Amino acid sequence: MAMHRKTITLTEQQDDWVKSQIASGHFGNDSEYIRDLIRRDQQAKERLATLRQALAEGESSGQPRPLDTSAIKAAGRERIKTGD
Image: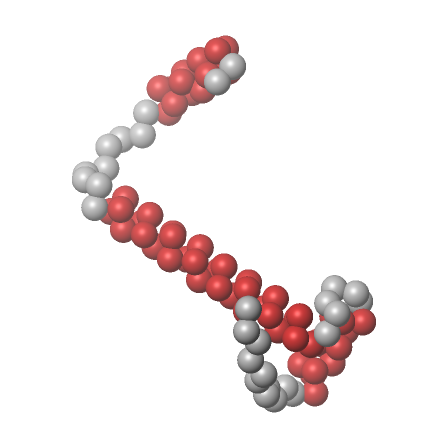
């Protein structure tokens, strides 16, 4: 994987935070910490997109029906009995 060098500017407080994360042993250097932040941001965006898609599918799936808690409980009890 090709690496690209970037220059970033941090406040003193931000720089102290990054240094503390490295000193605590969570990361080996500044670059590892920044890459971890980017990965987490990407994952959060993917989870949000998945959630939005599921919400859109739910909204377009038709009219809502009343929730039958008795049927849900009965199905759960049956699954426990059968070991499913």
